Image (cartoon, rainbow over the protein chains, first blue to last red):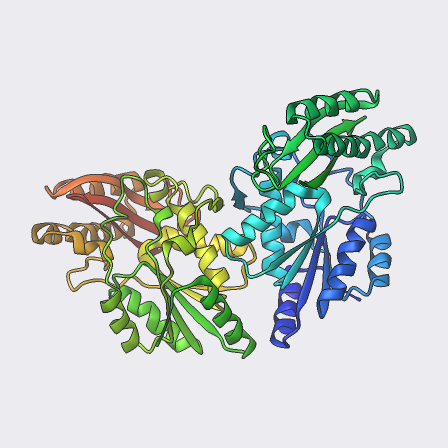
Length: 283
Length: 283
């Protein structure tokens, strides 16, 4: 398994692979890899000749008060996991190579970037769209893999790829959960033991919302019960959002009658840790 | 010479060319081709295996009060010129293919997009950066060619390519002028005969500014004389800007002492027609 650390080397290597007719599968990550990431890697391994994983904690997708500095980093552990999955190459760029002094260019997907998490993390999805564009230009993948735990991110990336005519297939993979239902996330490492137990309220609330939806309770009623359930957990310090949304526009749903699919989504804080989760329900 | 009209066909064709190891040179245009465009095409013909020219009047780079609707269009005349230059392929996309309903993604190069023309044409360079990104993703060129008449555009495109790590070489070519010095522009077609004669004031003013600069007159003094010269032409209806600027940052120059190069630039209106021109002076 190769590790490349400069954009120049990575770009030259990608050019060579393409000229050889190799099909490249790409998994962009911020490291601190868990089974969710590895499920993307395994899918990429099945679909492509070459699997490239990037590890880069992208500063421009963090707000000034967010956890950029303390975001978990573990290149050594990550490398062992990726080698075991048969990954061909890790791209591990330096921050100054990615964002040199005088950096000024940003990619923005309007409207869907401002909803849900976007309303609480201004600039976050602009940072995501920008770094993904850069990584796509550097690695030139045929396919790129994203986890559905970050559902809004997948909608934005797909829209960006379509709008900017990027010649890349975006593949989304299901959320991987712990045995008690908690969605895997690098940020779960922040949770103290009692917070970790409390965090199961998120998945339990998603399941309850799904059940209520299937009984065709009104969206507002479902939302009220979701908030009640989440607030009943004392370690939940704040709720950014919880409710039912259109899976494409991410707008809040007031009426199911013409929907085939509904997104149930939650973002909240347990202690200082912000966690998100979601579920797509087919009606 | 091939003409492709859909993004899908163009993208598939480009993919095939790259797999064959062909080097692609690309000249993006809005059509109504003149010798300035053809000088780019000739340079591309010299440098590459395949030359692709796009013709697309990009709506999102025009303001609501600007000349999108009346911008000159002449596909037949353009095709003959390009065939004569040995162009391999014209990409002539449809507006609804480029910007389908629900289009939402934009590329923005901050700061340098807000200066000079950017201050008078809000959103213009965002439109340019966005369409160029799309065309690069569709055509996948190794080299792309831009004329220095649109100097600010070349600075913005180079910055965008560098920041977003697009693996493309940007080549700029000198402004081509009419015998009396007027910079070639598709918008010159708008000028009535007396306006066409009056338009020579722009180049004469650039030459005079250069002479004054070489005498090391103070930038403010040069600017004052430039405005005087331009205003002395009765058909000049307004001046957006005229003066001396840093060729990289596009900021106005207050002092030459540490500059190796200076950009002299002018934007004004003759009748209803907005014209721009510039000159780089090496000190």
